[in-house]
Amino acid sequence: MVQSKVNERFSIFPCGWWNEAKQEACPQQRPQQTQTIDWVYEYIISERARKPTEELRAMLPTATKEQCGKFKVLNFEYATFSGIFSYRNANCLGARSPYICLDIDGLGSGGEARDVQHALCADKYVETELCFVSPSGNGVKWVVRLPEAVEGMCFRDQWYEMRNHLAFNYGLVADPACKDVTRACFLPWDNECFINSKYNI
Image (cartoon, rainbow, N blue to C red; front, side, top):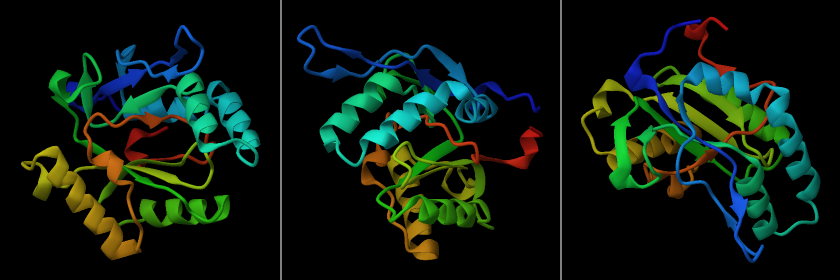
């Protein structure tokens, strides 16, 4: 397994909690640790991540979007792949990582999500670090290393460059909410998660 450099780390946040009135699911805003790409891969393929993912997918046919959202907040840990935060706020960004996460939602089926995953992992122009199917089962999370051409840009401009790459080469739309550097990426179970071969896992 490769040894990750300090600037290749990012924040991991624990599951959220109910407020006192038991009406709102509150996400954790303070990270529990900093971690690496290989750690996230091991987490995503582990049994620890399997139970909440299967429970979420079982409730999808009958639950509302709001109910599913609350369930994710309460039961999924999440990463901010683009950096290390002392608190999940853009003003509390301590260090940027070389990564950005693109979120492709609303695909027609789990099979289509898997096809998209395979296509993105074969991209010749962008180095994929991780790629996995989203908690719902019909979306894809694509974690890439930022190309040198965009390294000097602000985060939002980097995101737009990668969004354009995704649209031009694959006809796919990235979730615009991810242009926020603090955007949470929930970590589901996916035993077919892709990780770059340089990690030698």
